[in-house]
Length: 92
Image (cartoon, rainbow, N blue to C red; front, side):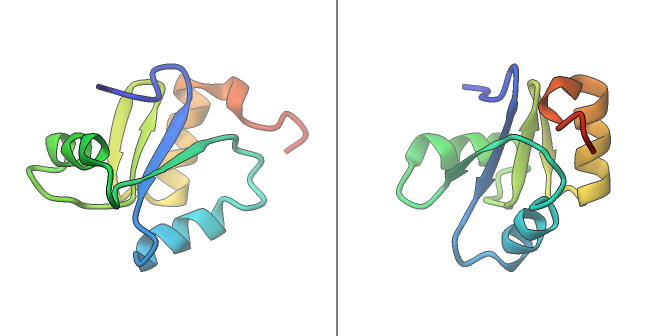
């Protein structure tokens, strides 16, 4: 199931440094997104594998139906501006 068809969903793992880095970098961006951990969630793991060449690479982010594996903050925000600008805080 491709989540995030109208929003942003970040698949992550609590012990992932890259996930923490991306989440911290988005802290003041104004981006509204949901998170879903792949720990203990077979469906989430299967989805991440399906878009990451069979790997459990996180963070994997879905922006309005478009999956991005380990995106930079810049790439993620560019995708949001293009595909789901309503999710960004207009004051920023």
